[in-house]
Length: 286
Image 1: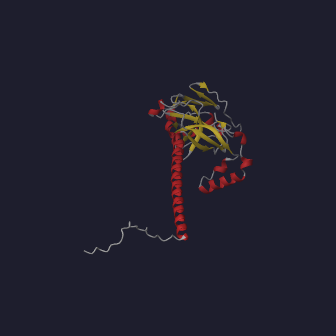
Image 2: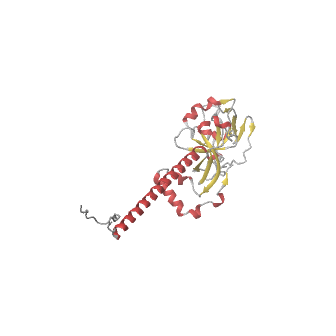
Image 3: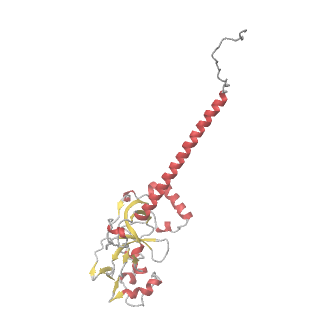
């Protein structure tokens, strides 16, 4: 039987598929796209971190201005020479007890004392704050005779008070009034109608949870004599330090609108070096 014609056996070899070479411009484009995506990712990460940091900063600032410190400026002469027009204050809101909160016993609060300077919301007008000095505490009996203040029958030492010899005010110099027939100019009608309800034997009796406060510039201060007591809940804190002071007069703060505020800021910025009271920077208030 003839043999089948066969070829010798060889191992089968398979060549790899031929891949076309990538053009240089395509590789460059891919590299650029990858770099662009990386930059976008870094940019998004930066924006995310910035937004997070900004949010934390805002929350800390809100917490600080709500519970610890707040800035105020002095627009009037009622507390001179202790506080001058144009003084910018940091007010410590983390100081006084008396609101009845549970945390008062855990934190370093203290009672309001006679002689403390306080910042408080004005009893009648919204969005307005006053700065005065506490003279009468709850339960105190207050009387003014010939410009001299008596508390509970004893004269009060007030080395910080100044008087204007050219100024005369029968109501403020001798207080409280003895009858309804008193000179009412400058007196809030609400206070004029109720003042005698708090007078006992010629002395004004301070009710519970209220304070009687006066300005150091006694003859140029609209204070508790003219509008009444300060409610404890209206007291925001105690001025701690003058962080900046600029020479100004009360008329500079008459326009409290946006345009007036911007104009005042720009004018102060132009004369920053000459108007700043450098000697009052970081001056403690007491």
